[in-house]
Length: 99
Image (cartoon, rainbow, N blue to C red; front, side):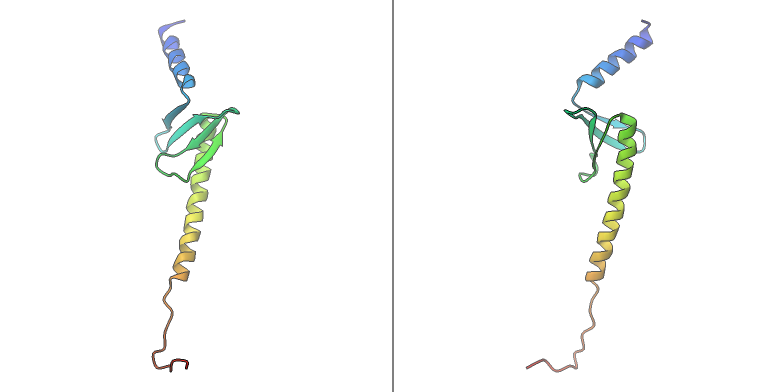
């Protein structure tokens, strides 16, 4: 085994012996935790609501992007609902109070 292969093997062993680790693809940072049933539980250190699972690291990024998109849509929908319910109502001050 040459030096490069030996180095890759050492990194692979360290990577797989840890239960939790942080990975990045340059656009997204994820926390991966080995799941008891296999695969990974995937979370984001920057968004505590982002939680998904995956079988591979590549799938973790794909699933996390899908989850982030769904969260963004859900938050936008919630903001529209909150904005609609917070719209001030017109009050007619000339109207007599009910007696």
